[in-house]
Length: 258
Ligand SMILES: Nc1ncnc2c1ncn2[C@@H]1O[C@H](COP(=O)(O)OP(=O)(O)OP(=O)(O)O)[C@@H](O)[C@H]1O
Image 1 (cartoon, rainbow, N blue to C red):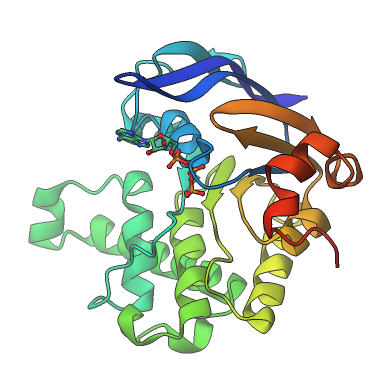
Image 2: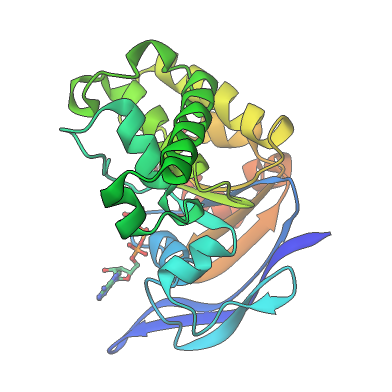
């Protein structure tokens, strides 16, 4: 069953077509990768799914319902959250607080109640803390709960970003280059985490990634963009051996083999 359907999605910036008539089907509970050279339109595609950009034309359906016209916070409320290419943590807040920020949409606390420290609000905040702690255990940061996010090692900061995105309890998690800048050990840990999110927490994952070893290892399905066009789609083995993909991307320095 498809959780997300993208139909003829086009985005133009003035005279530049960043994505052109993209069609995609993302199966529920799958790991789907979107790959392609720099400037191919991958981040623009994520920005349209999360309503940061309004498509010039085309449609995006979540469980059959169009997301077009919604605001970013509404898309998040319907179950799609993301991480960004560049780390965007609150460095001076603790690890726990960073995750709790990601929960805000699920916390219905009114500011008056918060100011007055009403007992039911306090209870809700305590429960949120417990949830946040569980998430931190999941991403392997339970020993750093009270550490400032800015003091974490690079790989740990990236995992915290994923934890914060998970705090919104998404149906679909979009990861924009999660392995960028990671060393092999950090990448391996990230790979296992992405696997677990899918298989244990039933989240559908869509990731943009240049690390082809990771992509080929964990993806169920891969879409390839080049100059805004969808040039191929298929299972990892099909993509690895696709002549057009090799010419446009894999042959130009991307590492496709283990
Ligand atoms: N806000 C914008 N205004 C104008 N042009 C834009 C804007 N955002 C993206 N573009 C252009 O759209 C094209 C696609 O960019 P995009 O960032 O989506 O590519 P990408 O595949 O994510 O690249 P990378 O792998 O380098 O992140 C590029 O030519 C880019 O310059």
